[in-house]
Length: 136
Image (tube, rainbow, N blue to C red; front, side, top):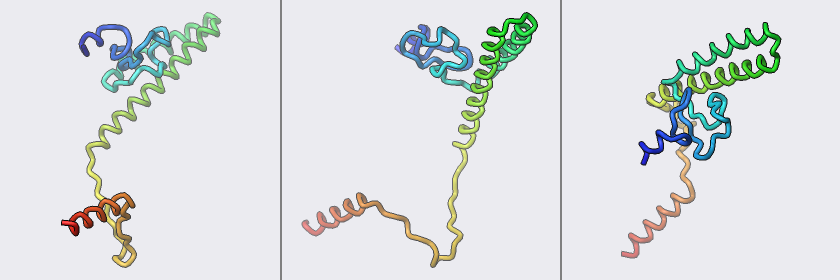
């Protein structure tokens, strides 16, 4: 079923820079960069960089041709590419950070250290366990 879904248009389809997560008709009319339904994949960074370079080059051409609306649209695409590249960088950073171990040391003198807080739910569960032992 997953293999079948991946070859169709819509959810789980491989698109420029990531994977489509939209299950219905395409709301962006296949303008995948800039679409909220495009889940970025850092392994596809080169695709977004290529699209960004293309958009920049064509924006310069649109400027020389006096096509202001086209230029504005291409510059928006460049901004969308920049945002997607930033999201990819954050994903990569999160993956690197996930592999780190965390050690928390309380370096305050013992008299300044606080005991860990216990939730009221765990206190109630502990009380119930003690009561069950007494009832046996």
